Image 1 (cartoon, rainbow, N blue to C red):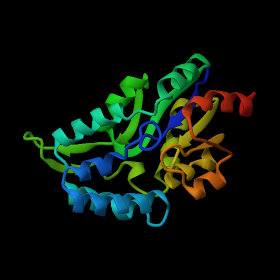
Image 2 (cartoon, rainbow, N blue to C red):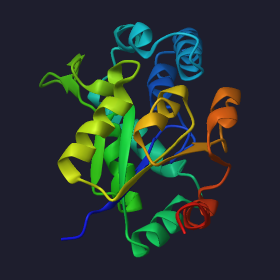
Image 3 (cartoon, rainbow, N blue to C red):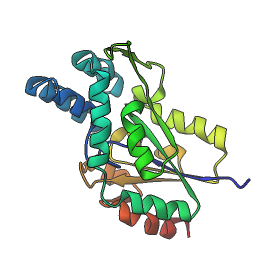
Image 4 (spheres, rainbow, N blue to C red):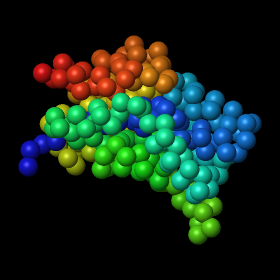
Length: 218
């Protein structure tokens, strides 16, 4: 079996317009939403570390399972409009897509299925039988700064890919640059100056991704 070519996507503000954690906060009212949104923005811009805000945001929100399911639907409703066609084209060209996110697996899986992506690497949330929040997988790499490159290194060891590309909008995605063959910054929804400045390729539409990879790798 030939070595795969991995194309790894961030989810929030990349494959979909929303930030899932912010939408979970929105359910709790405008004050909670504003507080969590500010924390998310500061983390994605690298002003504070991911681990500083990860547990704190969830402790503030305490999302119900029903809220997570609703956000899963919203991911699909707000999907990047060219994502499905771009991913289909990439798969035809021999790329294997997967999602690596600091978001929540249960919410992201519906979007992955919608886009034909078989594997989701994200954080599991835990609920009791009544659907009340009880915690999350604190050991998962993407819950902390520097976690995404750690997980990519593990995936590379597992899958032995021919090459690896990461596509994302945030500083946590940019951190993967040293361990991938190409980091593609994405700015359709939330262009970030640091990401744009340091990305080898910067796009505002996923429709441009197949051609960008062909140009880069030949």
